[in-house]
Amino acid sequence: MYEMQVGDYVVFPSKSDRKINIGIVESDYIYEPTALEYVQQRKVKWIKHLPRTAFSQGALYEIGSVMSFFAVKNYADEFITALDKGFEKTIAETEEDETVAATADDIIEATKDFILKELSKNFKGYELENFVADLLQAMGYRTTVSKHGGDHGIDIVAYKDELPPRILVQVKSKDGDINEQTIQSLKGAMREGDYGLFVTLSNYTKNAQDYLQSTPIIRGINGTELVDLILKYHEALSEKYKKKIPLKMVYIPVARENEE
Image 1 (tube, rainbow, N blue to C red):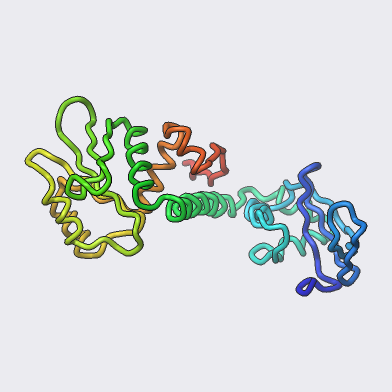
Image 2: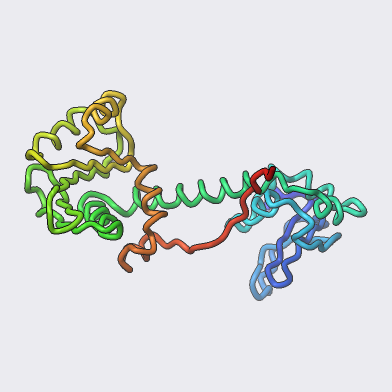
């Protein structure tokens, strides 16, 4: 209603025919209450209907946003250039699409951001403990979740099989980096022969990182590393948690390695 102006260009990726449609706004804002679906309108003169293969992977990724209305920024010039005669050949004749690698990285980072946000929003306290236990089971461990508030702060006990060693797991969902004293409290609960695992959605202070480095029987996992494990073992999670963190296995383009 306010940002769009007469004379602005519009890019519309239609899913039915997989075309990129480029037009120009020809009218001011119109409210049409009798319209079947979209009552807020502007008249658009469609100029070109181009195949998706005419554009770089980066340009296609930018206009694939889940938002219904937004400004194209990074690849705006490419869509403007598409109005020139013979544009269809420019991308198709390029030997290598240099945006492929960046696009793949963007997709991966967006997925990781989504997982970490879901964990931070929906997995607090005991719920995160149960989830970590489920993830460890997906990785091949036998786990027992401790009773709430008991067992000296140990949240999960895990074994690789029926035999030692025992792995004591502490899970923290609170914001803020974990300090050295918190790691030491886990060490104090361990018996000879035990291993420790500390899991946090945030990170570790410099002193805590140094302590973990000098204490190889305790492994610290931060939010980023936890997300990497979720991506690796997602298919083996229980149905409950696969629904809570819904992901779909897809193939994405990556840059070709240089061949000798």
